[in-house]
Length: 68
Image (cartoon, rainbow, N blue to C red; front, side):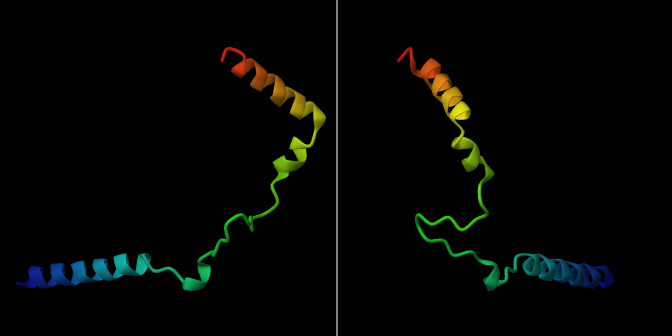
């Protein structure tokens, strides 16, 4: 009987910890609007404006799609 009581208390505590781990503060939720990016600036956008990279990407695309 003693072991059943200890087991029941242990399972109850485990359940409480499990439920507490699923809690999420409502202020942490990000609300997104369609078509609006609110994240940090993407460093790759500046690279895409480079004519050298644009030429390399165009060449790669031509090679990939020439056989189609």
